[in-house]
Image (cartoon, rainbow, N blue to C red; front, side, top):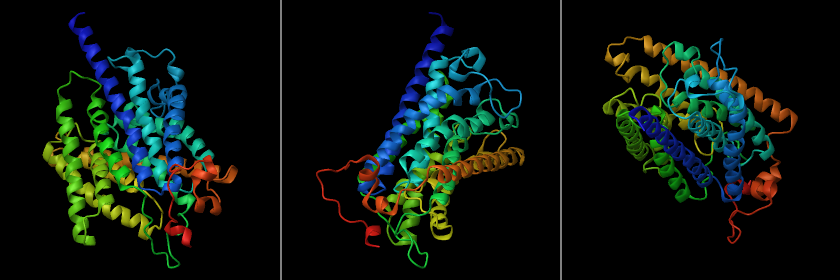
Length: 419
């Protein structure tokens, strides 16, 4: 084996290891969403997260990968490579095995799809969610991916989103916003005056476990996007990723301590995720100090974003997915235009890169919101989007899957069942 072959082997192994780490993030999302929701819906949450990856893997291999990375003459979507037909490392412009690259991109697609599950938790029909999962994996997400990573029009403009603050996370966040809006709030979430009520999740322990799994998996998500185990920048990317998450967590803890009179546990856990989402766009382009600044800004966007979505828009998002992934993803992408050491506003680059970042964020938001809104509207009209009130009050586990996630335990009535 010569040096070039050894490099290809190392890079391929690195991409596969990173893909395995990102795959493990599915467990993290499942635990976060399960822990932050009620026990009577735990089985339903697990089932949706499982099917996100299973359905998404098939649809992305069959259709999504081609739309995202296939050859294109229009800069909007690819038109070759479906079912991975005639795809080679050379046609993709990479050195690693196309199979390793497909798996790495598949776990990214699954992440975008599973984000929506939390925002629509506890009142969505399982069959309706399966339809959505198919469409986002096969169409909505891959088109955005082509714009940025597949040689599309945003790539041509120099848009920076190294590992997917906008491509992955804001796509999931904006789709979650459209779905939660059309779905409506859970029973008992708002009182007669429209004031939100807390509906506590059944296990902060599971929620915390999920956050730590996601934090761990992010070291595959961001450094893995180099597609090279011989690229020494993976160390710097890991450091910027970690610093943004840690800073956001500390900042959220301090802000909630002052604002609410206590250090809020669930909000601080979401602070970790908000910092991770925000740094994902610029993790390879900013300094450690820049990462700290991005994490700090993300903490404020998270707290005030959750409050705005719930109190002003009166949208019920049980896990805070819209703020964490949509708002922090968009913010982090824009901030890459400020803190990037190559072309950033603070590094003498003027407003050119920042303008491109804002254009990209707005375009991705418009595409995702419009297509997701249309999709959920059609699902609602054709097969129904929401379960009945009776099913929601008793729990989706029993009525959608005929199981009890905690069969040996007596579940206490939740706040909403007293309405």
